[in-house]
Amino acid sequence: MREYSVPAQVTIADSANLTDTIFSRAAEEPDRVVIRRKSGSGWRDVTAREFADAVGAVAQGLMAAGIEPGDRVALMSRTRYEWTVADYAIWTAGGITVPIYETSSAAQIEWIVGDSGAKAAFVETDEHVKAVESVRDRLPALANVWRMDDLPGGTGSDQDLTERRKSRSAADLATIIYTSGTTGRPKGCEITHLNLLATARNVTEGALTEVFGLRNGSTLLFLPLAHVFARLIQIGCVEAGVTLGHTADMARIVDDLASFEPTFLLAVPRVFEKVYIGAEQKAAADGKGRIFRAAADTAIAYSRAGSPGLGLRLKHALFDRLVYGKLRAAIGGRVTHAVSGGAALGERLGHFFDGVGITILEGYGLTETTAPAAVNLPSENRIGTVGKPIPGTTVRIGDDGEVLVKGTNVFAGYWHNEEATKAALDGGWFHTGDVGELDEGGYLRITGRKKEIIVTAGGKNVAPAPLEDRLRAHPLISQCMVVGDARKFIGCLITLDPEALEPWKEEHGKTGLSTAELAKDPDLVKEIDAAVADANTTVSRAEAIKKYRILEVDFTEESGHLTPTLKVKRNLVERDFADEIEALYA
Image (cartoon, rainbow, N blue to C red; front, side):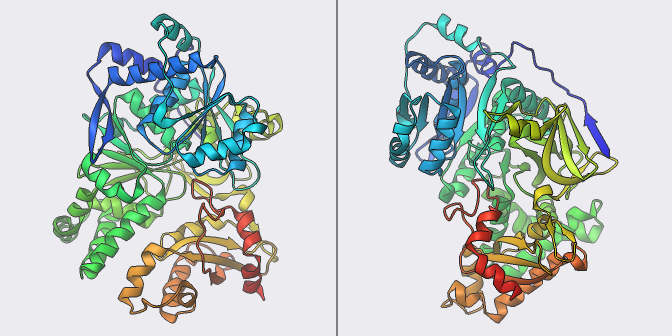
């Protein structure tokens, strides 16, 4: 058993809550720009006073509608300015926010709103309204449904508003976040004001001071705020005074990044993969594919070298003018760091961006740990690991290899689910279900999922994560799932990335081929063969993929095979692609 602890750098008063900072800043620095809001093709400044006034008005509206301290209010919308206003307004009114992914089905909405007992809900679109109305007769507690474009307002007294928001303290629940769940119904994670404040401040004032403490620092949020990762960054920006922006228009994300000019980003690994693939495709389309590949290899070598020699420094300087500078300019020109979480970031991708001049700080955590449990530091970034425990957190590796976490970031329990709470929390230690390793310096490496360990017919235990992470790093591969439980060897289902396929087909003269035909095309199969062989270098021969099958369709959230955080729902893939799995072993 190995354990590593980092002491807290910030403590939270028992009387504190999440609304304190926005109202104190409005009083002390009313003209300070805290948010830049989308306005046409540009951005409009929102001052601390304007933001606090907007939050206060919506909170008054909630109070007038009968929301009492401790009441739950659902929030279902894409990432936008009004999301943050509504979130803080719910807290100001003494309520508990229950976020719902905007892609959720009527059945999922019914479960989350019904299980949480939400008395009101904010929704964004006509489709959301229809989904809620279709199940509303089975939700007796739900009294009000408001549109995000028409937030409620009120004109109560400032004294009543202050008394209401101060009725909540650090120990009170701030939010119930339902895990997206790769199996079964989502469980509601009870997260307190203390969890969010302590985690946010120990990250912004401790672990990532160089990122959040940058003068005129800013970030553009585009991940769903229903996810704990984006939510914690939202709160961290508010606490640290970092200028915050919102966008959900992924078709315009490059334009929005260029005009907003953030100093740091947060994203899941798939976003970084898309940036890399997009840059590679553009270079190929411009007839500069060979130059880009050479630049990529140089960036990776430069990052791996640590102290590069003169020749490598000269090559790097050349490609900085030809390639890297343009890539940095494409995302606003000011980004120096990015925080990655939600899934494993491949080492090659991490070294590529580091060599380009954008340091990706990979971290690790779960909803139950209020997002981060560990993160790499700008000054101590060890690519390939998820860093050291954040301040105020202890990470332990159990006798069976499971990662255990203890600290002020660990949630209070599962809403209305005592059995699950007892199974997950043991003496303050949260059992993550992940398997990992801690080195002597305290750096954590995640090696797999405890419940996803595959046991072959020969009795070999195989963790699918290392193989899957390596495969997904290949430009042509979108998703994959390793199989082989109780089978004589390890197999794999692979899906192709539609965005990467088109330029590949043009380059190889195969524009007329369908995905089904490509799955049997010798040139494409050769590419996937190489990717599988590369992934197999990370494991022993007994754990290696012996056969794979390229599917004609992708795993997507819309198809039901991915969670909103892009994790594969293994049980559903096994059910829906049972014939393809059987074909591997026929």
